[in-house]
Amino acid sequence: MNYFHSIREAKDFVVSRIVEEAQREGAPLSESESKMLYVSSPGLSQAEAELCAKFERESDHDSYERKIAGLVKKADRRYRAGDRQDYDRWRSATELLSQEDHYLAVMIGQAKLRPPWDFLKLIITAILIVGVLTGGVLLLAKWGIEPPSKEAIGFWFWATMVAVAIACLLFRLAVGKDRVWYATEWLFNRIKAGRSVR
Image (cartoon, rainbow, N blue to C red; front, side, top):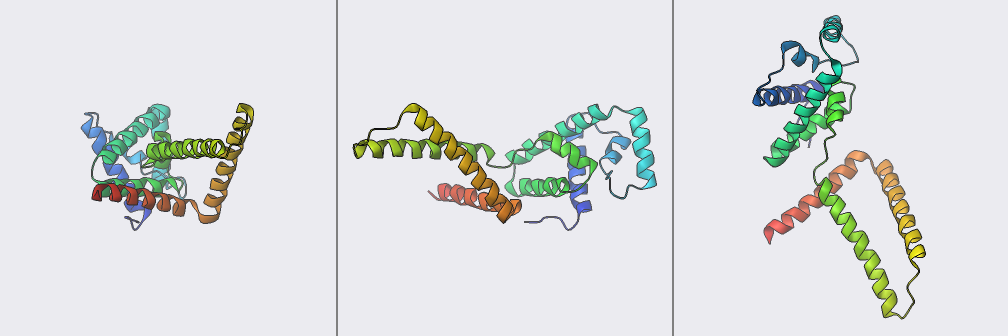
């Protein structure tokens, strides 16, 4: 779902949350630090160019970027633990900004935000792989077929992993990143809804 009608609206939302997070920590952003969050490379105005030059002279860029990335990460954690709709709005805004050439997008990237369900997806994938391999060994034993050697199992395991990774990559390229993202999100929401009904 798209919560924002424009990039500017999404940027206002993210900036306001970063400023709010800094205030919550008792270290509010200065006026120039807040203004720098609005800078974007395409169509840099003269006022923005002057602001960047002044900021370059007076501040440490690396320290500033680390500070903002930290605030973004903390805001993300707080939203993740809170209301689902608020978190979806936050994710929508950060993803929208990350698609374009904004200075703020650089710091969102540095925050390395993990997508929702990331850890759960990893666990489910691991369980499926172990389940398939165990099932294969049990079927071989049931049919009286001697199981393959450890070397052969190792080879086929890595060959399968590479094949799955290539298939996922091709699927993502063919269908599109956003559709894969929404399909995965939809699937895990259905699983979650099914559990809550029980």
